[in-house]
Length: 315
Image 1 (tube, one colour):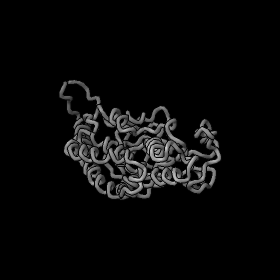
Image 2 (tube, rainbow, N blue to C red):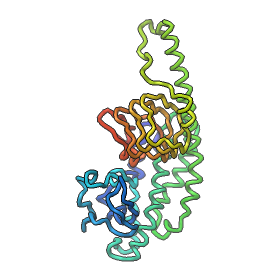
Image 3 (cartoon, rainbow, N blue to C red):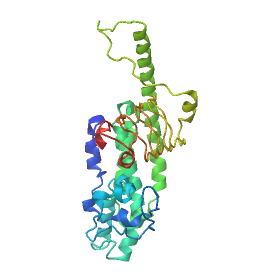
Image 4 (cartoon, one colour):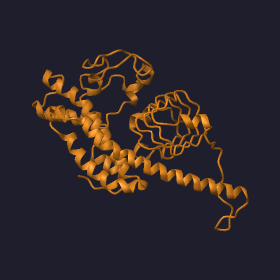
């Protein structure tokens, strides 16, 4: 399996593991296999297994250039992390080159395998990030072993994919990712305390160790109130929350509901956002580059502008 060193190799590892969606190698599986519910994300109701009316015969989208204004922002945000092209290849190999359009058996296998491989790709995405986090070095050996075990599963034949207990794979990888998150957040918390101490010294007039004025002067960031701090937890309901300008460093917000939350100017260093729902969250002018476990789908769901900073692998 790929052996890429931590921080500088994450993008290369993502490429080697085929974790970037490539619609040109897919047969529109997400446009058929997913159940759509008419909402702010999708303009129509569509049962799983029914092709979207906008899907063309060449498996492209007929309204791709105008999806948001046509009522389909959810399609823009959706990202299978490369599962679509993997499943397409596996199904073609198992069914003599057939696609879901050609053979009911191929369709059955394709749409059953898609969510399985999507979950595997997501786990590989997280493991690749763990290996890129210097503060999680104590978890790197275990992460490499987990990656070596998990990566081949995404290349299984269609029948083997359908028999795979993906829940067991998630349970094996999850604690490792949790450990890496805790290591990074602990380090960030220590760094914040040291930074705050320097700022206090600066306000008392302490000189720079280099004999010049300090360049790390306090910013306009605010500490969260006690009430907000109590809400900063995994799975928190922060729908529409006003978090502007707050220092959220090292918060554990995995699985949190942040729909429509205002994150403008917030500090999100080492904030664990694994599985957080960021649809419509306002990240204009926000630095997301040091947040933990962001996926392309999450980035695609937030409001951002040219000032929004993203991790290099997502930029």
